[in-house]
Length: 241
Image (cartoon, rainbow, N blue to C red; front, side):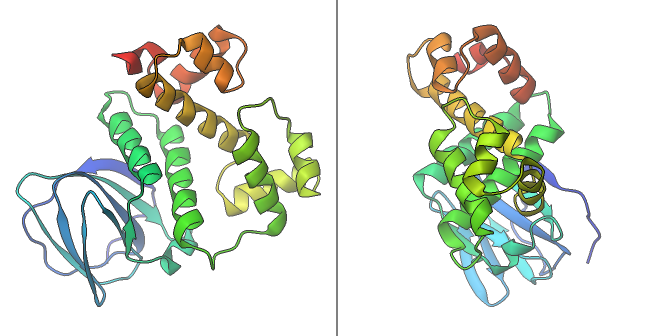
């Protein structure tokens, strides 16, 4: 069992077969190219275009890969996301998750790496898992109310005090609760949601950059472009190529 307290997010390829082993951190394996057959505890499954694997900390597992393969792999300290232990070992890959995996692959393929933004991206991915397959892992109801409000209104101008009112908490209490249960502040969560939508619109629509900026609550194009570049390490025009 190896000690790996750091959160990592990277692209990996696997050899054809591995001995059964375990580690003291959770591991998420997301498909890009090829397939990976896994034994996790007593369960058998695969990482493919239809499925993601979640290997919980301490779970004995082994794998067998196709010849050409690439996966987005996240090593997640159990203390950062203890709730992952309760999720299934194999999770269906729906269209929203597939799009997010595509985004992660695109980001990780860039030369410039942004560790802080990768942490937020991974935390948001964990939230997507929980929303779909962690019905028993309920957040504090006040936090749930605040997060749902952000998810529904992130294309509008929002303030922390406005969000705190929705949650019936003080701004300080809301910040602390968000950090403790989601791993980022409400403002970081809001920025991440906006940047993900902007990236999606840049790649999938013919909207102008100005129109996309307005869709994600930036009336000033310069401010949007600056935030986008800071977040992804590339300007909006990069995703139009």
